[in-house]
Length: 288
Image 1 (cartoon, rainbow, N blue to C red):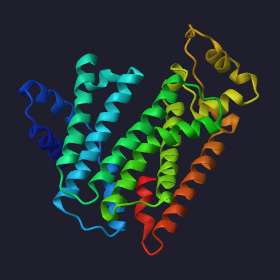
Image 2: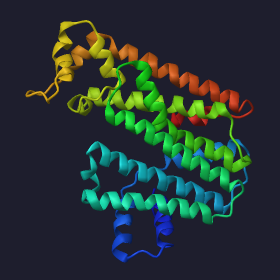
Image 3: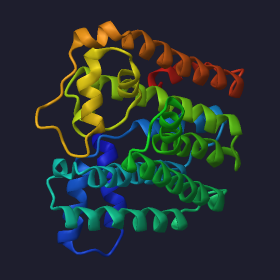
Image 4: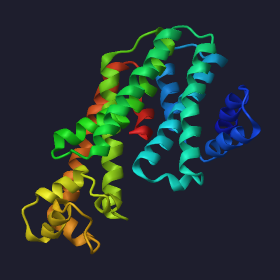
């Protein structure tokens, strides 16, 4: 992790920015908990038998810069930006500067298939923004709608990492890889949303409609009447709503979540086996 942060700082230091602004950007980079996207990209590059160069490694770092930007921007849009320790307006300005930096750096690099690589960034950032819009408007009332948002929002960023690896190796990627990335994103989001329900239940406080919450809202039992009333009200409830572990267990939600997670985990692994029939795909399990 330390090397990744130093590599990101080196990218920023190439640009003629004031020392105060550089310090601001470096403060953000120091808080970046990344690595998985880079590792996933590199793994697909290796599976496609690409020849790694220093310029290719630079692309990995630019990818992490992209993920840092989206993390910050998502927190700003969700009203959770205080974790970065920087005033909102300054944080917004700093995060948007990262977009300029990453595209300047992509244009500077001497890599094969440069245009294809740049278009991947443009395309998937736009798709992620589309997904974020639907997440922010919270118009999610079905399993199908939930999965659609996940595929667009976090699925687009995982797809960027995966398809970038193949594209860096041979200039194109297989369509199955994008679908596989969407399955990986679904598994991760299902786990995150279920973990929130079992823990702090921030999603309930914010009236977010995640898949486990949708399940409870549609579960025909009076034990969730208060939860349904909380979501129907146009204003925040006076009393805090908390779903107990006993209620969750009684609803059968643990079984449902296990089956859904298992389903998309298997779909992802099956596609990886099709994509790389002669490779050992067990290494991918740490990312799914």
